[in-house]
Amino acid sequence: DSLSVFPGEKTDIWRFAGKVLQGDPNQLQQLEESWLGPIFRLRTGQRVRIRFKNRIPQESIVHWHGLHVAPANDGHPRLAVLPGEEYVYEFTVTNRAGTYWYHPHPHGLTGTQVYGGMAGLFVVSDEEEQALGLPTGDRDLPLVIQDRTFSPTNDLVYLRSPMERMNGFLGNRIMINGQADPTFDVQEGPYRLRLLNGSNSRIYRLAWSDGRNLEIIATDGGLLESPWSVPDIMLGPGERVDLWVDFAGSSQETPIALQSLPFTPGSGHMGMMSSRVSPPLGAGFELARFQVRRTGRTRTSPPQRLARLERLDPAEAVNRDNPKRFFLTMNHMQPTINGRTFDMTEVAPDEMVRLGSTEIWEFINQGSMMAMPHPMHIHGLSFQVIGRFGGPGYRFLDRGWKDTVLVMPGERVAVIMRFADHKGLYLYHCHNLEHEDLGMMRNYLVR
Ligand code: C2O
Ligand code: CU
Ligand code: CU
Image (tube, rainbow, N blue to C red; front, side, top):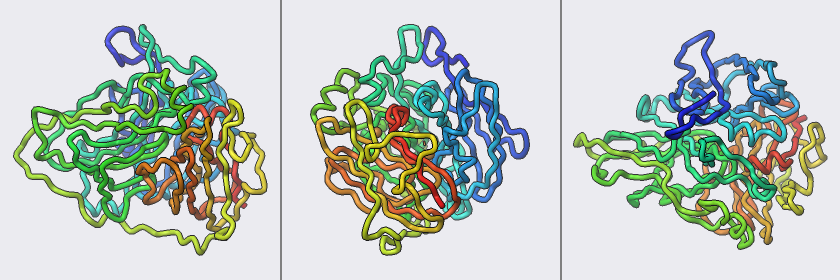
C-alpha cells in the first residue's frame, strides 16, 4: 500500500487490511491515514475465525500478542505461510479485558515486517470492565508509539549496519498511530489512553508535560486493582499501559504533551554506540500533544476500585526453591538466552513445563560493557512480576498481569506464571525485534 505520511512522495508500506465477513462490522475498527491494521474489538468468551491471506512477497504468520490461544493459533514461525498462501485461525478469546495486539512472527523477518507497517491492536472487553463505566467511543483513544526513519523521498529506511541490528533499530521520527508530531483535539473530561510501544527497539519513559501524575489503570493483561499514580513510567517494546486522564482545567494556550523523559539505557559503551542515532536511546522528546477545548467542566478522578486481580503465590510454584534462570547475554554480536539461540523445534530440558503447574522464572541481564536492555516476552499466557533486583532503579510496569517485562542491564527480574491453558510449543524471546530476528528467542514446551 502507499500512504501520505509526509508531504511529498508517498511511503510504501505493508499493512493488515481487514474486513468482517460475518458478524458485527464494528468488531473491526478501521483507522484512516495510518499504516496500522484495524483494531479488533472483541469480548471475553467470543469465538472468532480469522483468515490471514499473505499478500506480501515474504513468508509470514500472525501472532496475537498476549492472547492465551492454543499453539496452532499462536503464530509460531514454523507455521509461516508463503506469499499467496493463507492461514486460518479459530479460537475463543479467553483473556480478560485489556489492550492486546497482533503482528507478524516469521523467523528472521519479524522486525522487517513490523517496521514495514504490519501491526494492530486487539482490544478485549468484559463485563467486569463495562460495569465501571470507563471512557468509551472517542474517549477511548489508542496511541501506538513507533519510531521510523524516512529517506528524502519518504521511503522507510531500515537497518543500515550490523551494529544497528545488534543494538536494535532506532528511528529518528517518533510516530503515533502512524503519524508524526500528532496533536489530538480533546475535550475536558475523562479519557482512556491505550498506549502500546510498537517500536522495534526504542524504550520510552512516559510523563505528562504539566507535571501531573500518570494515572495508570491497566497494564499488558488488563485492569489493575486500583489506579496507580506515578510521575513517570518505563514502556519497553511490546508493553502496553492504559492511562486515565481528565483534561479539565488544562490551559488552552499551552497544549499538554505526553513526553518521554531522559534515562540512561545501560553501560557507557552502549550509550556511546547508540549516540550516532538521533535521538539516541534514552534521550527526552515529545510524543504527542493534546489541544484541550474548554467546556467548563471540573476535573474528575478515576474509579478507585477497578478490578479483582488474582495474585499468584510463589509458595505454590513447583520450582519455588529453584527458579528457572535465563541469562541474557551478548556473545560478540549475538544476543543469546542461556547461551542459546533460536532453533525451530529444539527444546532444552529447562524449557519444559507441566500443564497446570506454576513456575518462577528469572531473567538475568548481567551488567557488562555490552549489556543492553532486553524486553522479555512470553507467549501463551500472562505472568506477574514478583521481584526486580539491581539495575538503574527506574519505575517499571511491574503490576498486574503482564506478558512482556523490561530487563535493564544489571537487573534480575523474577516472574511467576501458571501454564494453565494448553499443551504444546510456545515461544519466549526478547521483544527488541532485531534481537528476536537475530535468534534471541527460544521454544518452551508445555507437557
Ligand atoms: Cu509480540 Cu513473540 O511477540
Ligand atoms: Cu506474543
Ligand atoms: Cu534483547
